[in-house]
Length: 242
Ligand SMILES: *[C@@H]1O[C@H](CO)[C@@H](O)[C@H](O)[C@H]1NC(C)=O
Ligand SMILES: *[C@@H]1O[C@H](CO)[C@@H](O)[C@H](O)[C@H]1NC(C)=O
Ligand SMILES: *[C@@H]1O[C@H](CO)[C@@H](O)[C@H](O)[C@H]1NC(C)=O
Image (cartoon, rainbow, N blue to C red; front, side):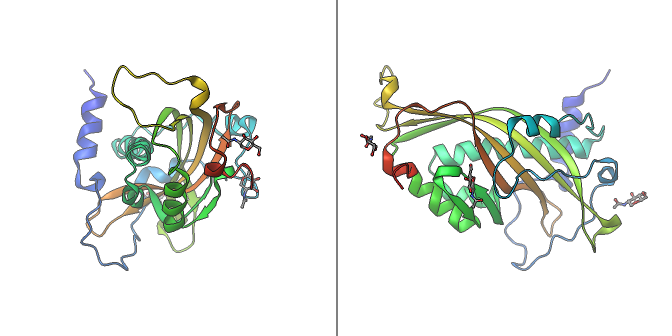
């Protein structure tokens, strides 16, 4: 009998896949660690943006046609850590706990949230997102399906010339409430909320700390609107009049 979930849990519990990353590493520590053995079986990573703009839905569908999912405990743990980072983004944003974003985006991450802005670096991401959310008392980011493709990037100076990376596309329904919840039952009219259907197109970096603990972080996020905004948004918050 086969218990894939137990294997996955064992892989997650192993030192090589532990999370969170310890903070006791030297600040200048370079994560120059060999890619896992399965990296060489992966396709080359596609580029998930075109001149700074998210790809179209047709292009995204084409990119995720690969059937390559390595049969490997480390790969299963890597996929789970990526899913966890996607989920933790919603917790950080809806919990207004912006320091948590340090563990979600790389220091040099780029993010194009369209009308909200193009952000370069974790400090700008935190400042822009926290400012954009100030007009909403509450939000709920419902992360829908994520398609994740582990892939490799050719990079000079690395073992075998490749580093392990990943790309993903995640469906999101972000609901923005102008007033705080006063508890259940509470009612708000649909025209007084802003429901925004989007897709996050993410490129990933696998960071390994000096103890060998693995963290997957977003280094590129390009947002694609899907459908139309439902309800209304205060003008200032997303710069519609800019
Ligand atoms: C490097 O490539 C060789 C031959 O393909 C393979 O056996 C080895 O596992 C690879 N090493 C790493 C760290 O990926
Ligand atoms: C960000 O994406 C939007 C489209 O969603 C595009 O109009 C804009 O030019 C992009 N910004 C940058 C800096 O590339
Ligand atoms: C947003 O701006 C438009 C056009 O400037 C205006 O008609 C509308 O009333 C404004 N909406 C809000 C919620 O301020």
